[in-house]
Length: 310
Image 1 (tube, rainbow, N blue to C red):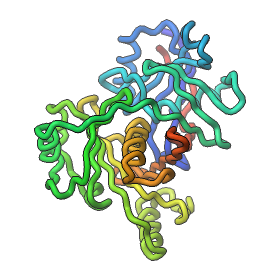
Image 2 (spheres, one colour; image 1 turned 180 degrees about the vertical axis):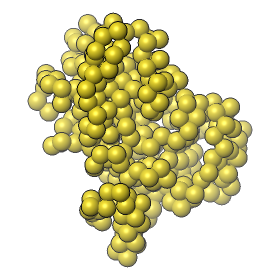
Image 3 (spheres, rainbow, N blue to C red; image 1 turned 90 degrees about the vertical axis):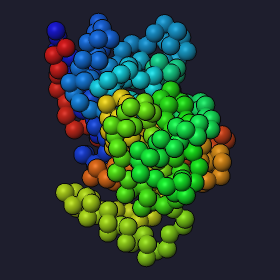
């Protein structure tokens, strides 16, 4: 074992401890897949990443670094909050991209472009494959979530590396009140992302929600809430098949949801999504669609740094 630089980064939160934590090992060289997986299981976070030099092919295509991404139970080809958190950690540790405003990350899903807008980072959503789910699967998932048929407005299987069953529900409160049977979802082997979209809110509704969010974030009550950027979309992610009952904030899911919802006219080209509300988090995901390309952005904050013996 040797001492390796390490950071724990909070992603998709405007301040520390409000988003989704990520463990980042800044030097993953000479570690086996089994050693990486063992450490990811030990951290018990939704994802742990290991940074490496790009492959020859990746470097030739412009990659600045390579990342391997692990949940407690499996390696992922791509994931959103590990992409932004790893890039944040790489830049903070002195990484120098080849281009001024774009960083290119290599991962198992290919090359991912990441742009900088001040301190905020955003990635291009990978190509999405989507299809209509089988009625039997949809019925079983609905049962595990406690949903009635009328509460599901639309559904799609979404594949951008990770595969999610996306469910567009009727109301924000329906999303927030779900109490899933995680064991049933694990047995089905299907990760599920649920989303609701609110119609334009009146100023009174915005103030009321601002007050609710302030109460939910009482430990950070000094952080102001801007009612002008309150989220239009509410998201929850259930991933029991990979060892995470509910993920606080999920970039890959938000990317695929945006590609689906914008393309089918359910959501506007640009919006803010909230996730983590039921876990005491105030995660914020910023969606920007332009010329057919979806960008997924969020803030990152380093909470822990030092070395880890691996």
